[in-house]
Length: 258
Image (cartoon, rainbow, N blue to C red; front, side):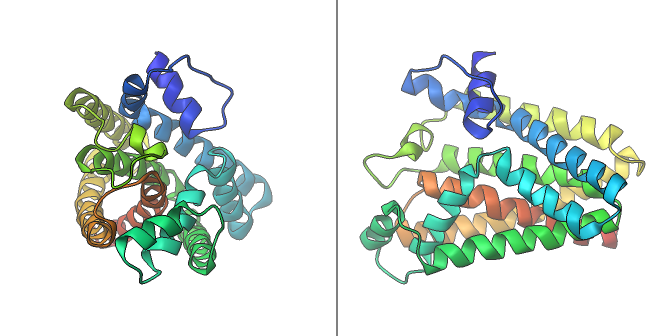
């Protein structure tokens, strides 16, 4: 329970605090990222659906969804998104890229990265609401946090210090197994109860979307390793944001094809 509280405290602004202080114990909170992702996804969709029912505005409801995703996480991953964009797209060598990413100042690529990410998410959510499939966006939040776990488990840390050092390369097999187990349980439950599309349809759509999105994220991981040779805390934030959008885009395409 303490690790779950730690995961909620780390990923959200919800008033829940944990007593975890041991660095070795801290990495184990990632096992509960799927549960926190489920909570966040439900919050985003519930607020957005509520606003849509009252305001009957696709655009306003989409804005509320995006704002909710920023507010309830405290904008946690946007700093990593901006720093990663500044570094990865700078065209510099590894050491210089890491130096740029460590700089607290935001550059041109960082600003552009945030703008593109927000606009893309806004557009995708708009379409999801328009097609009455917003609740499926919960899957994207779960996928993004799962990718953080996978990147951290299989990654190596290219720096000597930083927040990412608590997670990257520090996750044990038990933590990964628990996270994957929770992922499977949550996806099965959501597929059973979400909307009225039928269990098989939702599950098959999710599985196909997951495979395609996962392949894309592996390609991005390869690109990152070519540039900096590892995964940093900023990269984990970057991954959380872009993988969420990628999954929603892929899911929408698969949903329409099936």
